[in-house]
Image 1 (tube, one colour):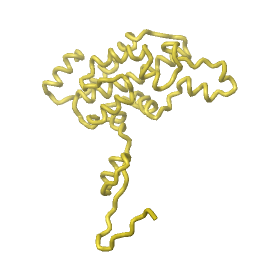
Image 2 (image 1 turned 180 degrees about the horizontal axis):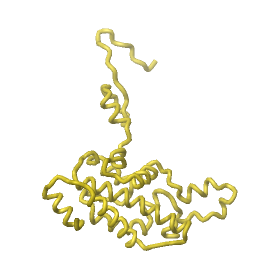
Image 3 (image 1 turned 90 degrees about the horizontal axis):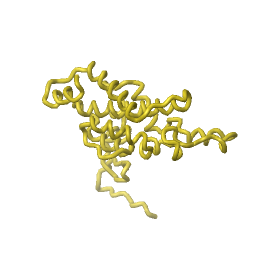
Length: 208
């Protein structure tokens, strides 16, 4: 009863409903732009380091083996398994806590953020992805550096967690940042950029 009868005086047209719930005229290009993940170019890019990108992909898919997940899976010992964050030992471990709320990772990010030239006024990973989405496809040096720093940040935070859990080894946030800085700097030293004022400033800042 709620379906309108077709108007035989008008030609048929193909529409589809996008993720915002709006009916738009169909095109394969628009369909592809809408269906593909908004974060793919933030994670997978030519200058990326594979192990860093893989960690970023796991974070976005929320597949990192954080302790809240392990506690839920380990039914037999779920009452005794420590689910607190391995970095701060205060709050329950989770993806959002690890990259939004943990004082350890917030401290590391505050140091990393000093070398990011794309304006990101957030330390929450979901918001960072959303803010980067608009510029992620650009091949500008500052965008590439930002994506490298973000993926390195995720990788070495996760590496530190595993070192604490399985090797009983630990370092402080400043040391984690120094490792991130050194590794990203080495990657930048191996890359070629077109000469520009922005690139010269970047090289000076990274001592390249």
